[in-house]
Length: 238
Ligand code: URA
Image (tube, rainbow, N blue to C red):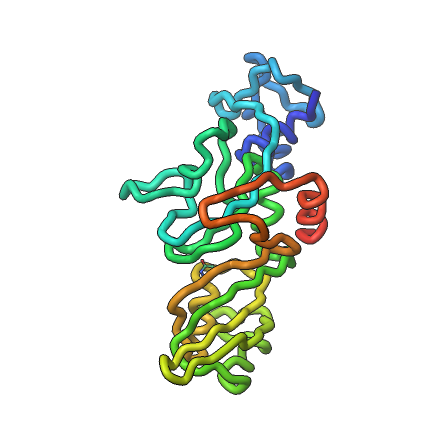
């Protein structure tokens, strides 16, 4: 038996706090009866409805996926392009990505059916470091990258300080490989940050998410996260 707010949160409908509000507002039925008491316990066979729509009670599952380039971070696409869930044909749970990587970005993406977990990780205040490796046009040096360590203004809002490492530069092709560590998740953030310091991104990969790496995976492959990894992520998201 699980608490009603947890079941609703796990179904990805709302965070646990929002789920409590939904229950208190009389929008939830269990086996046809409106329940407003928080903490009511429900079992797998109970039919839970939110605003008249039944929710499925699934075991929470957590996957680490190596997203290839050319795949949409979504579960459907109106232009019929490949989506990340196409790579999980044998997974029956209704998983979806936590946050997004651009269509042309590769690397680590977490997928889950646990709405509560997903909201915690995606919360703008969380502090989980993500490491990106970018191939950029131009010769990266301390001078052009330094402003990123102080934060720069993008669309009217300052970015949090980032860390960088210059992996290599190639004078002939005028390109560099730069590693950038950030913990925010604004749209196209890495591309926009590097563009802003005169180093447009040609190729981008997310290599680390907290402690998680792509070790042992090829593009398009996934593995389950273990209990310790899940716990660590939640701990870091605090
Ligand atoms: N920053 C970007 O610009 N793109 C991504 O896909 C992820 C981070």
